[in-house]
Image (cartoon, rainbow over all chains, first blue to last red):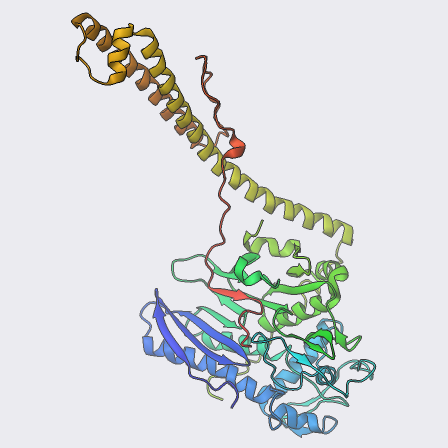
Length: 334
Length: 177
């Protein structure tokens, strides 16, 4: 099973930190045990929360031909029985599509495959250059038939994806963070769930105060310079859409993984990364992607119209924010 | 699927304020964002000013004390009789000097100690003033001639505030290549 790797746990400074790799991401939970809590119970809860990421990956990955998602994609216009996880993910994809006015659209699988992202690529280890003789002359625009309207039969556990196959890359991680977060509430109300930077922060760390989450500098040399900002979060989620890592060249053309459904091409002109703070991790993830795809010129007006707490980094390094995120800012690079 | 449940209630937050009254125009929202941004920058600038207020007066006063001590030393040496001056600068009190000269040296040194004590009191007073929130403390006016030039505040490096350590990082850093 992809991502079924060893889990690591350690107690440090009064909290339990558990980590594993899943969904091509370092997933971690930090639990602050309530007074009198059995350590074994805390450890078991952490293990169950991390297992959720592996379960979501197994159901929703497009990098395995026999995953439930890819089996459904083989005949998307037919009713098919699917695992509950996939059914919920398809429904969340529909909600994300609707709330973002269609900016987030799961029907970008064809465009990603056309650009060469049809398998796991060695991002970060080396520059990825692909040459595909079959690249179409024009982009494949998803959603030619209108809004994303999958069929869902909850009682039967069946879905009908529609005429086009889908990718759940912009949905699955935030959804897994939400479920992991909910699974921990009863055992450890103070916890932090972190899936590759999409986080749910509940309560606070040992010693008080909010959880502190750094906003990565997505510029090419950003890792050396530290974060561009630090957020203090309590009972909030945060998600970032970034093209720092998942970018490659296809037939000599620089591309990345965030496809604009309006054009079928990589979107987000002028932007490197967008961070959104909200109450729910899946909602924050969808808005971070939608804002990114709005591009440098429209991101500010879209974020303000929607009342979003957002921070974004442009290609020239400029960092901008909406007023709503100011209350979460604990530090900002001058 | 151990541990994975699907609560009946789902995330209600589709868009904050989706049922709220219409938003003001973008220009007004943009003005609000700009004010918030300026508030954040002003807070950081005020913090840097407070650090500067603590560092610069103490540095200036410390430099003043050293300069005054040097000037006082030269003053003492100039006012002493040549023989006493030579004895003082040689640091061999009493070696080859008359009792009258030694007495004069003792009186001068006593006055010197009083002057240094007064300067130390002034430094302590200024340090207390610089540590409060009443803004930058005014330096005492010094009328001694031929003092060396004091360092300007522009030359005093104010340390930038480092980022606090974090529990997580949001971005692409958590992705496994």
